[in-house]
Image (tube, one colour):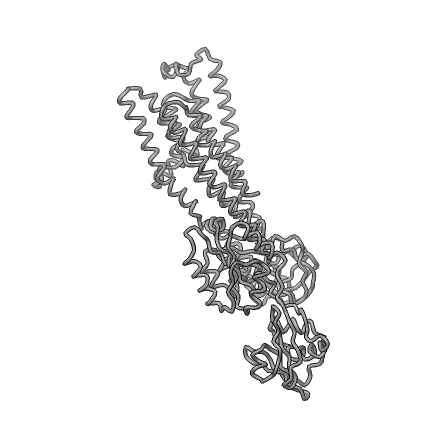
Length: 625
C-alpha cells in the first residue's frame, strides 16, 4: 500500500472514531465540556467514556507526527512543524480538551495528505520525462540476439530495434529506414523521418519496422543519461527565494516557540490563570508552523521546472528560473541560433553567364565540407570534375587546376591576391567570386535565412522590456542585415569565441544589480560564453555534450519561441511564489496577534497553519498549467 493510501486509511478510521466520540459527547447529560474538564476524576467512568474514543482517534492519526517529532529532537532538529503540532496537542490533552487535540491533529494530517498529493502531482510532470529511460537493449553478438541492460552496451555494438521499442543508446542507422517518435525529448508530436546513415538518439521510439544501428556512445555518455541526470539534480540548485524561506524558517520558528513560552509563563505568574494563558500559548504555537512557506515555495519552483519540461525545455535549477523572470539582456549568437545555419543561394551574377559560373563553382567547391561550398554544389548542376586538382587557399578560398583551366573560387582577398580585377558585391549575405584563367567571371550570393520563429521571439522579448544583443563572427554587412531585419538593439561582428566571452563579461560589468545577462547559442562553439553568462541557454543540439553540460537551460527543440514560453513560465512561477509569501505571512501575523490576546481559539490557529498551507499549495499547483 502506498504512503498516501495508508495515511488516508488512518484518517478515515480516526475520523470515524472522532465522529462517534463527538456524538457521545453531545448526547451526554453533561453538555459543558469545560465544566466537566474541571471536575473529572480518574474513578469516574464518564471520564473514560469521553477521553478514550478521542485519544484512540488521536493516536491512530497522529502517531507518525509524534514519532517524527521525537526522532528529530534526537537528531538535533527540534523546531519543526512536527514538534509544534505535538506540543500544542499534548497541551490541549493536558487541559482535557480532547476534541480539540484530536480535531487539530486530524485536520493537520488531512493537510499533509493534500500536500503529498500536490507534490506527487508536480513530480509527475518531471517523472514523465524519466520514462525516456530504456529498460533493455537487444544487441547482436556472434550472430545472436542478446538482451542486455543499456549500461552493458559498448561503443560499436550493433543493436536491433523493433517497432515500438525505445532506442537504448545514441547510434547511427546501418540498416533500415522509417520514422521515430522524439516527443519525449523535444516535445514535438510530429515523427522524424530517418534513413541509413542518420544518427538517432537514445530515448526515441522506433515507429517503423525493425532497424539495425551501431552504438556511437555508451549509455552513460548518451543524451538520455545526461538529460536524466540534469532533471534529477535540478532541485539541488535553489533560487534565492527558496533559500530565503529556508533561512527564515530556521530563525522564525525558535523565536515563535520562545515567544509562546513567554506568553504561557509571564502572564500566568501575574494573573494566576494558567489554563487560559497556556491555551493561548498553544494556539500561538500551532499558528507558528511555517508549513505554508516551507512547502509551497519549493513546490512552486518544482512545478515551474516541470511545466517547462513538458514544453521541451530543461532547466537545471530554480535559481535559473528566478533569473529568467527578471528583466535583462538576451545575447544571441547569429549562425545556427537566429538563423538556420544553412546557406541558400540567392543569386548568380551576371545572370546571362549563370550556367558557366555554376559549372566553375561546382568543379571548385565539389568535395569541400564548408557549409557555403556544400550549398553551392547542391544548387549547381552536377558536372564532371575528372582531371581537376583542387587546392585550398587557407582562409581565402580554393583553386582548381586541370584540363587547361585554372579556376579560383573564394572571397575578395583571393581575387586581390591573384591580381584579378573584379566588382565587389554590395548585397547583404555572403558572396563567392569566380575567376577563370585570371579573368573575373561573376559571383554567387548566398544568405543564411532566419529561422521561422526568430522574428516573433525577438519581438516578444523586446515588448516585455528585454534588451537584445547579437554577437557573430560574420562580416559587418551580413550582421547588419540580420540585426536590421529583427530590430536587434545592438550587435558586434567579426568576433572569435574569446571575443564573445569578453563581450558578455563587459555586459555583466555594466549591468544593473537586478539585471540578468542570458546568452543563447548552439552549445558547441559557444560553450565558453554559455558558462560566463548569468544564464546560458543552448538550443537544437540534443546530441551535444556542450549543450547539456555547459548550459543552464537546454531547449530540446530548435525553436526560439521556447525561450519566450520559458520566460513566461518563470515570471508566473515567481509571481505565485510571492503571492504565497504574502498570504502565509499576512494570515499568520494576524492570527498570532489575535491568539496572543485570546480572541481566537485553536481551530482558527489550525486554519492559519494547515488551511493557509493548503491554499498556498493549491496556488503553487497553478505553475503546472
